[in-house]
Image 1: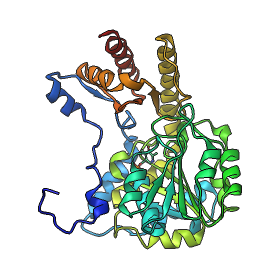
Image 2: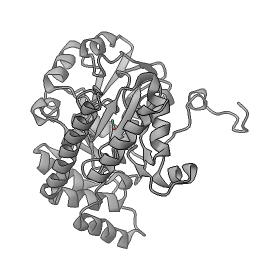
Image 3: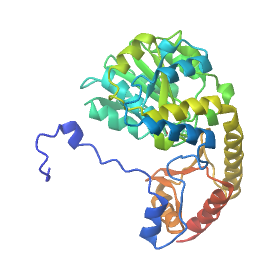
Length: 362
Ligand SMILES: *Cc1c(COP(=O)(O)O)cnc(C)c1O
């Protein structure tokens, strides 16, 4: 190591620096353009409802005080909404915060953490930060191979992480798939079902929260970041056995869930019906993107979230750069594919025509 941070834990020194999706401003500056759009971070193109923004703003009036560390009112409101006892609910600093809490709670050095790969890039980071060992059954046709996941579980496995829909490939698993896994693996293995994109997926796949009462090792996490457009406020929740909630709560950074986020989340729940038209419009835009891509001759995995995944293989890096030079910022997975967030109609049209251009050169 060349820096002067001596004594850094090897697990941290070995981590790559986190690279967030490039902003439109950065792309503009880099490529000398002025109209870049960002379809790289699965953000919602629609701002919070005015009532929700107002609730968040109102909460900053007493920002001189710490907010309720436990987010008690929100836990109770979530319990009513989901029709479960609020002892089974915890609230965290985004679902990434909840993931970090889970790793702090369960992963000791050398513990194996199983997650199919490609999947959410935070999984290897938090596993390795705890000096845990990632175990990665490969995807099959860009989707989870659930029997390979079960086969990957050994006596050393502490946790299984399943994003459904999966980021970045967009495919989803059903409650039957999750039940089958839970029935095949030992019940001391913690299973996280990460439903960050639940609101965009086929609801006939079932509701994993229904399985929590029968499986003390199952944790389901969700977020206000994506369908409800609160990515910048950092708030998510999880449903689990009350004892798991109690232990996870011990690892929550003091006051990490700020008052504006709590107020906004409460307001989202109150106005949740008003979000449906926005979700529906993103779903119909997603369908239009699938049509456009299919017409261009692409074959893509079934998208169940607010993004599409284009498996471009070796052409990924070049296509990503060309798209960016044309002002369309997407998320590349080198050697594998490009993840493109569903945006507004105009943004999606920009992407489709830029893609034709990107793939016609060379
Ligand atoms: C976006 C995303 C999250 C969400 O994160 P927040 O911390 O709630 O903003 C969690 N899991 C996956 C798989 C995601 O893609």
